Amino acid sequence: MENADSGHKDSRKNTSYMNTLLMLTNRERYGQHKQHHASYKILRSLICGRKNILRKLSDLVWRECLPLPNNGHKFSLYCLEKKWLLRFVLDKKRESPVESVFLSQTHKFSDISWNEPNKSLVLRSTHNSRPNQHVRQAGAPVPIVRLLAVFEVCPLKFVGMIKITEEVFGKDVVNAVISQGLLITMHQSGWIRMYSFDQIVEKYRKFEAKLYEEFDTEGNICGDLPLGLPCNIHITECPPVLFEVRCAQHIVDVGGFPWHYLISPLSQSCFRVCNLSNGQLAKNGILSMDVTNLDTDKANFFGDDSGRILFVGATDVRLLKISSDDAGCKIDQDFSIDLSRNTKMNEVMYTSSGRNVRRRVSTTEVQDTSEMTIHNVDYEDDLDLLYTSAVYHDPEGTYNILNLYHNTTGALLRAIRLEEPWQEVYEHRVHLDLDTIIKVVKPSPGRYSCVMYRLCSNIEETEKSHKSNSKQQKPDRRRRSRR
Image (cartoon, rainbow, N blue to C red; front, side, top):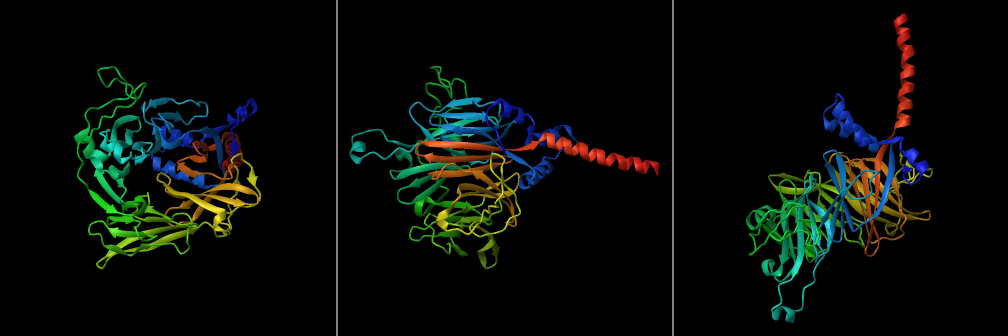
C-alpha cells in the first residue's frame, strides 16, 4: 500500500501509479476484448492476489457516505451532510464536490441508503419525536415522523419527497424506510407494514421536479437555496397494505426461493423463517447461535440473489440455503466462517501506507469474543465476493481486517489489514465497490470519518517487467530462425 500524503516528493511518486480499473476500462474500449465480465474477472484476480497496491486517497469528515457506480466514465461518491447531498468524483486531483443538492430549510437528513442497488437511493430526515397528547388535542398540526427523498442515479435525478405522518399511517407509526421498491412503515406496537412505492408515486405525486430547475411560480429552484427539495408526493389516505407482520425490534426481511420472510419474534431471542404464502415455519427455520452474544445477532437474506440467508453472530458468519420438496421447505447450512479461529494464512499483509507486516496477522486468531467485533458482512456483485469487516484488539493495538471470500465455497481468498487509529468507535462500516474500499467510522458523537482506498498498479514496475520479458524472448526467436 502506498500513502498519498501531500507534498512535492509524494506527488512525483503518485505519477507512477495508475488506477487499475481505469486501465481495464481502457482495455475494453480500445483493445480487442469487449466483454466487461472478463475484465471484472481480471480485476477480481488482482484484488485477491498479492501484487497490487491499495492507496489511501483521502480522509474526509462527513455525516454519512455511499459508494455509487460510474456516471458516464467517472466513479462517484455521494455524501450526506445535514442539509446537503454532495457528489464527489473519485479523483485524487479533486477534493471539492462536483454536484451539490440543498435538501431542506427546516429538516436535517441523517441517513442515506439504497432503494435499488446502483439505481436508486433514499435519504431519510432525522426522526421527529411524538408530541405530548395535550398538544395534539389543542389542534396542533399532525407531526411529520420522517421525510423520505428518493433519487435515481447515473445521472442524478430527483424522483420525489414524501412525508410520513400519523394522520395517514396511524398514531403509533414511529419510523419508515424505502427499500426494493417498497415503502415500509414501523409501528410502536411491533407491526411492520409494506406498501408499493411505485404505486404511491403514480397516484399521489402532484408534479415532477427537475434538479436545478424552477418548480413553482415563485421561482424556487429544486435542490437549491432557500427551499431545497419540494415535497411533491402528498398521500391523503393509507395505501393498500401488501404485507404486514408483527415482530421484535422491527426486524423483517423477505427473500428466498420460494418466497419466505424472516422475523425476530416478540417473545424469543432468535429468528424465524416462514413461507410468505401461508406463514408456515420452515423445517430448521428457527435460527439461533450456539454462543450467547452480548451484541444482537443479525440475520437477513443475502444480497447476491441466491436466496440464501446470512446469519451473523459474535464470531461466526453462516450462509444458509432454502430447499423445497413435497414435504415442504427446510433450511440447511451452506458454509460457515469462524472469524475467531486460528487459521494459518499464506497471504502477505500490508498496512495502508504500504509497509509489509512481518508478523503474519490472521483475521481469525484465537481471541476472546470481547477482543474482536464483526462490524459488517456484505457482498460485491460485480466481483462475486463475500467480504467481512472486523476490528481486533491485541497488545500491539487495534486494527481492522477486511476479508475477501469465495461466494460459493466460503474459501478465504485474501485478507487486507487497514489501519485503525481509533481505540473505540460508536459505528464502523466498510464498503467494497469494485476497486474501491470505503471505510466509514464514527469516532465520536456527531462526527463521521471517511477513509478511501483504491486498487492501483505500479506502472514503472509493470513496464520493467514487460521489457525484461521481451528481452528474454528475443534471443529465443533468433535461435529458432538460425536453425
